[in-house]
Length: 87
Image (tube, rainbow, N blue to C red; front, side):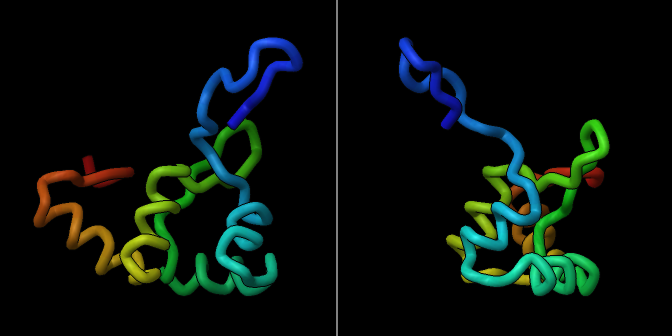
């Protein structure tokens, strides 16, 4: 969460950078890049030159046991919750 010095939590972060995602799942940044290029992570998004994961998609990916992107998108289609570019 983003925190103000005085006000406490303001907004939950929506995007997670690759290096942060790697730390969250316990792998190196290099391994995370390999996972991305092989289609084994949720979609990434570009914002102002940064490559990000949507935080909610990253959490769901971990909660479901790290399925590959195709499996994760099939789950979304089956549940009627298609995310990313497939909307």
